Amino acid sequence: MKKNLLFSIVCTLLVLPFSVAIAAEKHVPKNAVQIQLSYAPLVKEAAPAVVNVYSRKVIKTAASPFAGDPFFGRLFGQGFFGPRERVQQSLGSGVIVGKDGIIVTNNHVVSGADEWRVVLADRREFDAELLLSDKQADLAVLKIDTEGEDLPIMPLHVDNEAEVGDLVLAIGNPFGVGQTVTSGIVSALARTDVGASDYSYFIQTDAAINPGNSGGALVSMDGALLGINTVILSRSGGSNGIGFAIPAAMVARVVDAAVNEDGRVVRPWFGARLQVVDRDLAASLGLDRPHGALVSETYPKGPAARAGILRGDVITTIDGHEINSEQGLRFRLATHKVGESVPLRVLREGKVKSLHLKTRAAPEIPRRNEAVLDGVNPFAGAKIANLSPALAEELSLDEFAKGVIIMKIAPRSPANYYGLRPGDILGNIADEPVKSVADMKRILDINDANRRWPVTIKRGKRRISTTIRLRN
Image 1: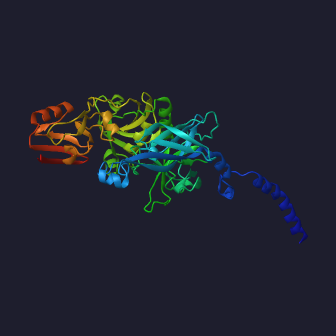
Image 2 (image 1 turned 30 degrees about the vertical axis):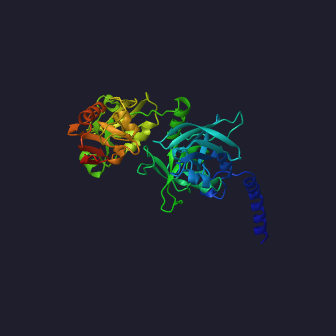
Image 3 (image 1 turned 135 degrees about the vertical axis):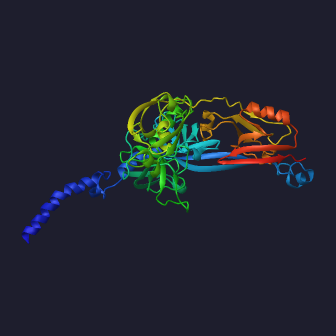
């Protein structure tokens, strides 16, 4: 009995200092034994760099048809039926990544707005300037002027790749309730079938992400920005444990373009068409498993062709990262600047070859030569342009697409009335092939005022042939 009591006292004396140390200083959990510890030190370090982003847009409504009517003017006043303004506001999150007031968020948080305001975690408020809006990557960069006031920043986690199973925190402002922190793990990497941006290559996490978290931070255990939370998969609109973040490598590239490249992202062009290597294709190529991306066509004198890549090559790695899809390759290239040399490996006739791709921008050949069509024809009011690799990339189209594309349609125009749409690629018009804007203008000049117009257009993956008859 006395021995047991003495043993208990000794154990208590040995454990007590350790318990006091735990109470005095908390640590981020590093293993299962430490799971009872707290994320609080990490949150205190990271959370101040996550901000609320308020976007504001003034929408003007059209004047009433009764505006100017003397009878209704006397009843209600002349200004009652005039144009009115309505303010549309939205809320998202952002992350401070530069001491000079540089903030990164999602493009869909700020797009279409006229004014932006940033509220820090300590309730300081600043008007923000939009430096860059990148729809393709769904990222935007804002800047605030603090007039010398210090700002908390979150470093970018670019050098080290995330791994499935890594612990992460998601910090943002879901549903506008105020800054919220949720925890989880990296559930998957390189998700390419989400469709939230043109460069779909997301980190998947089960940390709760909800509306309002967009633009917030996915934080690694060293307190760095692992990614920008951007989209969730949910039938209800709430978190189902499947959220996606844009990796920090892409964030760093967009921020660099905003700060050092006049607010314009110019991404490298690969210049080849790829297809996924499935099981059957892998067997026909003699591969032990489906992996890599098969080159089915190279653009003449494009970067891929200049690097020595041939039709039939299987691209296995780029920059040391395994490639299994076109989206994965596009993402890896997009994290580089134009002019850099990028190492890659290809499998050719059973042998691995190491090559270097000298990156360059997609060329605008032919020049777009934009023109707005007019006259008495079903195309009047359409803005058209010549397709090129540069324009195709800008519009997220196949870089091999050629011909003339409709860029815009004026409201209440003949082009709008007869069902033409932006994105339609003109084929044959009035039984003549359209290969350039000049061709289209010439065809309209010859056939202007005709009542019957045979038309062939490509709309997405569909080819539409019809005859448009002008109405009086």
